[in-house]
Image (cartoon, rainbow, N blue to C red):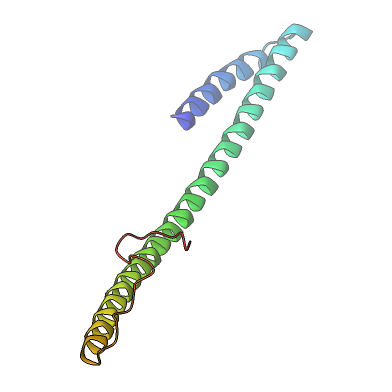
Length: 123
């Protein structure tokens, strides 16, 4: 849309330029109008170029961030899977120790922390 506006503005300013440029005796007001029109077209083109470059950099940054987030999500899922496997292994070993303790006439080991609860307090 912005490129359409710039193109339309350029056409209008070109018509003004040719009208003023082909007058036989342009006044200083006509020349100032001509200069102001071209100056505004130049400034608009500069702002448009800056906005398009900023948008392009933002799109590249967004793509890089999306890739990083996807990779990190994969790592988090892998770590959660590993934690679940370790919890299962810890429970299995505790059960094995209970069986061995029961066979040997020893008292069963007391578990200090409930593994399924996910409680991080080690008090």
